Length: 212
Image (cartoon, rainbow, N blue to C red; front, side, top):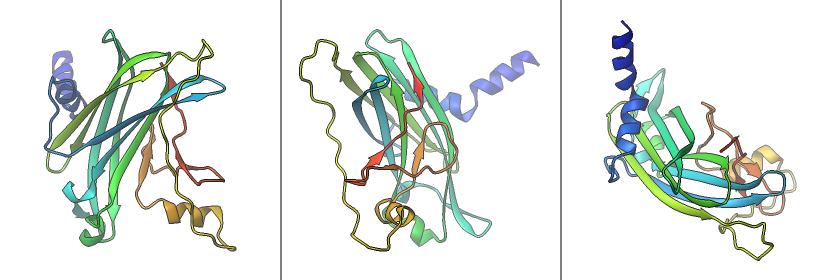
């Protein structure tokens, strides 16, 4: 029975997706875009942020309880320049829409994973699997986190924000709805998380989760 449990674990969606993710070349059955950026936080130092996107139009939506539903498995790993694995994440995401037209209306599923790291060169690998069709997509990228202890001027990743429409009666939830057209999933939580709002730019931020 122990051997059977081990074989079942190796055949799980997460294990299979990690195997595909770690292959030398990316898999393109699902288009996955990856963006890596970093910030220097006053309290904990450098933070590496992984953000990936998958367009809704390629997902397999099926009717469940009166809603169009797609289920995704998301995995990822962060490696240093010596190939040592540090941060890792996996999540199961359920995306719903009131109709198939709304599901394919040009929106995207976004997932973010922040992690505190030491200065150095890092590789991030991510994978996404559509649990209905079995199609998967992977992406990988490199990012260098500079050492700021020398006091020399360094440029972080460029982050852009958009101003929300002016409204004298708008509250914070209305502003969130106005600028958040797509669902953003964060960390290991299995529910949508609203981006933090910068009061001057209403920028999208991901809350940092765990350390290297």
